[in-house]
Length: 123
Ligand code: SF4
Ligand code: SF4
Image 1 (tube, rainbow, N blue to C red):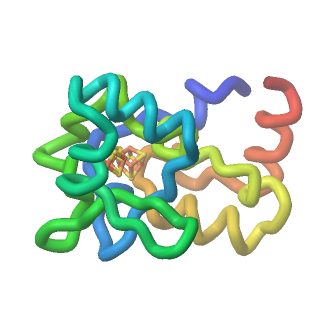
Image 2: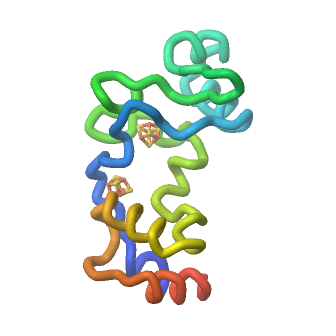
């Protein structure tokens, strides 16, 4: 079973909701800055929340600042957003699998941990 057989993003935006976002590494920050066509200092001031060494996107009204009926920075979004929801922690632990599967309607209905592990081992 390939990924396309058990997952199809429904563009519902649930994963862009909340009071925090994924964190951005250096490459993410550079990609976002290039995508927006703005100097990083301006991107940081307008769009990012920096807490110690952690750089996240700001949130507005309970969602990522870049969410507006979908991601508005698709080509420039962080790698963790690209990876979601197929996070490595899903493979490591069935409770992580359940938590993420239940938070994302893109997974095939009734997908089990065993099916998921089997499918991922073939990719
Ligand atoms: S929660 Fe899942 S289905 Fe919805 S937008 Fe995010 S990845 Fe796609
Ligand atoms: S960058 Fe895009 S995909 Fe990532 S949380 Fe923000 S709106 Fe969602």
